[in-house]
Length: 240
Image (cartoon, rainbow, N blue to C red):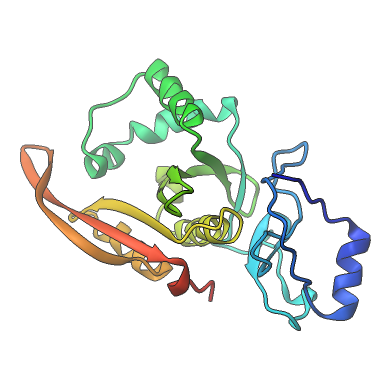
C-alpha cells in the first residue's frame, strides 16, 4: 500500500473549504518520531486525524470542530506499542482482575515478550493507549485479520489504575474506526466472559451486539463460565 502524508498546508486548505476531500488510495498507518499516529485520511474517506485521534467527518463539516484529546478526561491517544512498554504490559497481565476475567495463569516476563512477538509475527495491529497526560495506560489490538473475509478480532487491556474512567470507550471507538476506515474491514468481533459485566457494557456502548453464547466455556477459580461472542458490522458503526 502507498503512503499519504497530509501537510499543514493541506489541512489549512481543507479547513478553508470546510470539507474533507474523499481519497480513494489505501495507505498504511504511519507514526511520527514520538510514536503518535500521523495526520491523515483513510481510504474510506470519512475519517480524519487530529493529533492521532480518528474522527468521523462528512463532507461539509468544519475541520475546526475536531477537538484535541489533551486535557480532556476520558480521551486517549493510540500510539505505537514499543518494546519498552512490555514491562508495564507484564504488570497489567498479572493483575488479579485481569487473570480472573481472561481465565489463565500468571505470565513470566519472558512469556510476555514472546506473547508480543507472536502477535507481531501474526500481523496483528498492536497499539499503545496513552491518556490525556500522555501516560501509558494500556494496549489495544486487532488480531486474526483476514482481509479476504473483511474481518478481525479486537482486544483491549487497561492498567488497573485506568479502569472505570472512560478510557476504554475512547480507545475502542478509535480502534474500530481504524479497522473500518483504514483496513476496510466489514466486521470486528470479540469474545468475553459472561461474568465480565463491565466489559460487556463497554462493548455494547461501542455498538457490539451479542451474537452467541457458549455455555460453561471457560474455567477459572473452580467454576465454569459462559463466554459471549460479540460482533459489530461496518454498516452498524457510528462514532457518535
